[in-house]
Image 1 (cartoon, helix red, strand yellow):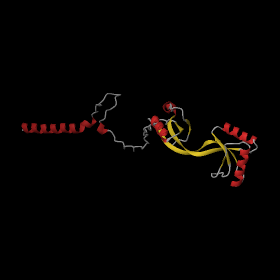
Image 2: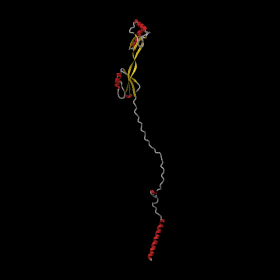
Image 3: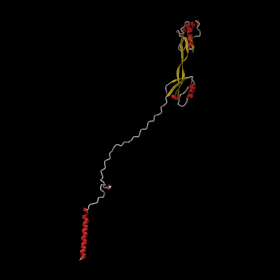
Length: 227
């Protein structure tokens, strides 16, 4: 009987302790996890996730590479263009060309026709036909004017030739002598076409190209168009 009563008391005691543990813990004040004045720590996983702000598409400045500086080509040397001549013969021209050949020298040969004075002709113009020309010749003989010739051809047939002179002073003297005898003598310069041979050069202006020291000074020079 006593054991049964003790058993019931133990069961009642267990029920009372269980009820106290289940109901009495909510009223017990909980101890703070941190000291006063210290911010409470939160795990990273407990932090609220804020929505990501849309990325702003700000213009990105792209630095452009500096343009390579344009290289300035060296200034071309100024060219000097000369015409050297005239040479008397084609062989003289070839010799000069050989003597002047060298680096930086451009050359060309050319031939031109020119009128060259062959002398000064003293004459009496044709008085008419052949008969009049012969009569004038007899008058010259009577006036002791010698050294004459009646032209039978050429550009002035039947004219009376009184001489061809290389020196114009001698031609004027002859004219004056015939004029003193009473005849109207005249002087005409006689020319003929002859070939001239030239050598054109193109050289750098600052090259101090001395062509005279190579071929001599028997020919001249003048500026000409470059080629």
